[in-house]
Length: 204
Ligand SMILES: N[C@@H](CCC(=O)N[C@@H](CS)C(=O)NCC(=O)O)C(=O)O
Image (cartoon, rainbow, N blue to C red; front, top):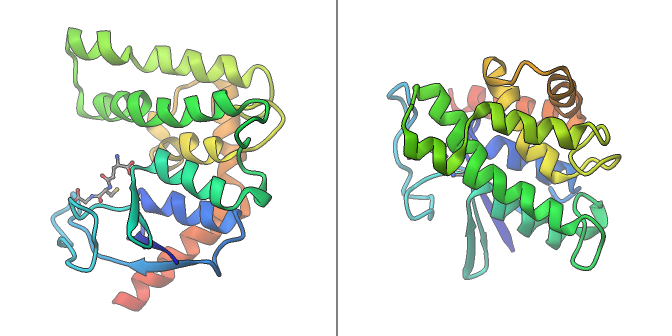
């Protein structure tokens, strides 16, 4: 049985939306856990088996998956009938995996670095910068409405997420802003947000 450890209004909300997109809500047990928040609220939850108490975290029997890029790839392979990712051997598989790793290894550091005002030559040499990130996104989106062209995939769900949460961080490039709006308008996003509002209200 797959168990997904989730905390409302956090990075794990995008994984909750993915599970909804995959039509897998009846096959993944969602466990709500607490996390320490930036505003000082919350605490590490002993019920969360993540080695650092973070979310999202996914367990599959004795195995586990951490980091959103890996969780996205794992769940898409587990529920291939949803068509949210090219499977091994299918066209665009390489680009799909590259976007997931680019998100985790480059985009998140760049976006967070910008939020924190980080400016260091080694940081820039390693990750480039937000202008370079915007170029990479814009050149992909020049080929179609989504990162893989005509086809919406779980890569769009993951990569648009920081800009949906923090619109001020979204590059001021029309093709990127339109893509973020297109992804954010998917019913799974509204569903996940409503789920989280309900969970927070129930928790008091
Ligand atoms: N790189 C991880 C980041 C996970 C992460 O930092 N999650 C935050 C929630 S938005 C968290 O669990 N914070 C609690 C803590 O740091 O203890 C991913 O993308 O999955």
